[in-house]
Length: 448
Image (tube, rainbow, N blue to C red; front, top):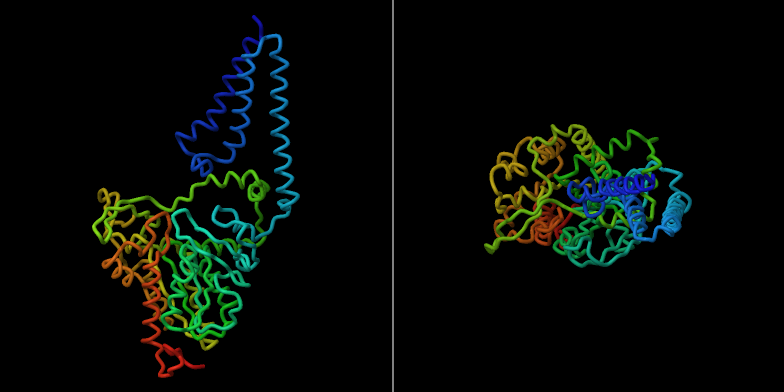
């Protein structure tokens, strides 16, 4: 028996089985995020060459026997030369052009899929920050509004040239508000209602410690009279723990593989196939009685501070230090708390059953005196720091019209009406608590 008649079919079977393992099985049982939520990088890096090799060898079976060896050699040589060339160019770009051979501590912030070097730069103290004088026009996500986004000389979402502000806003993506046009953010609506000069120092992805650094580094330079510090229920505790872990390991560097994936052109192209999924779609009844879909992401955790003690300890420490800093500068600090979507929109969601509801609202519970908001409220009370939990105001607006409080699509953030509620609540608080008879002061912050 001719040995080639044995090993060639056996080799083809093995190659097709290997190709199926890397490329076909993940379609049925997803393994990771690439390929619209199916593949790991290793699946694609091994699977695609194996598939091409399988196709080449299978195609050679249809070539006359006299030329089969020659054609097979040419096909494999061509395939190998193309793959090797792509690999050399990609590795050369990643390690030589982008300098992946030289890691920096701050690069850890670019390990995920939400932060890119296109719009952000490393920062030794903050971890990362937005690029100064950044400008883009479009939609943050396919379902978002069309908007114009730009940053000032410090990388925050403000017009350039602001040197003084009555009110400084610090916070995360809810304050930065990159899902809505600038004029619809609660910072700008607050400015329109009060005529007070404002500056927005919010940045998506920041946690309490980074927001404190922003206040210290940038906030007081605007000579403010009031600082509004926004806290978000969904991820501030986990962000605080993440930042603390990063700070605790100043000499930690990424692996060679991780540095390559962050600088590779091929990986960058594959990253475009990562689905930006922000929760699960659930049916809900809007204020007109229509049934729509509401994407719900974060679940309510009634005892979240107890489950994340490090994050809570870091948050407490940051707010205490921020309050003391404001006191030393003669500045008023107001802490505001924004709840997760399901705690406001829960009554309008049509859960399939109790088990379905319990995924997002354990036991149907929407409030607890042991949750994150209650913990921040108690801390502020101990400090003597003003505090507003926006949950009640957002719920009241939802009872009137729940269609645009939060985005109903794959977005965790406030929609237009949600920003209106925050701005109105803040403006009323200023009128009530910081009222001065000065006609020129609009709503009258205390004179300094």
